[in-house]
Image (tube, rainbow, N blue to C red; front, top):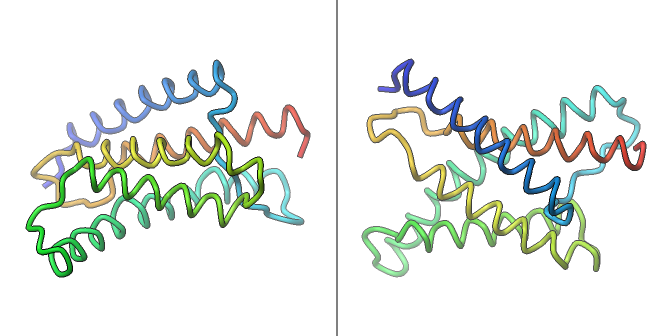
Length: 165
């Protein structure tokens, strides 16, 4: 069972890692990931959709559902009893990057650094999600949700400041 201290620790760690990811983007602006286009949405709606809803949906899809699918495939097709954390993370990161490339920015520009960085972001988030409270019954890790929401909000804010989108 997830305790209050465990949740507080996840929130704190999530915010600390978020600061690190944001600083990385600040000093290496190429560390960016494509966004969905939300035509005719107000700025507030874009922040709510891109900065809040999409990170939660992606975390459920990529840190809860996809690892389960990878484990089932590993056991049934390849007869692997336990999938290595790094292999699972690398596959998760690759699929995360392919998803971002095809869904949010399938262009020559997106194929360059942002594809690789989306894969690294997905790998890192997968590894963080695997590092969890062993007694936790809550499958969605608060840490990864906070990091993802913080990073998307930061990138979206930069987009509005630079481009005025």
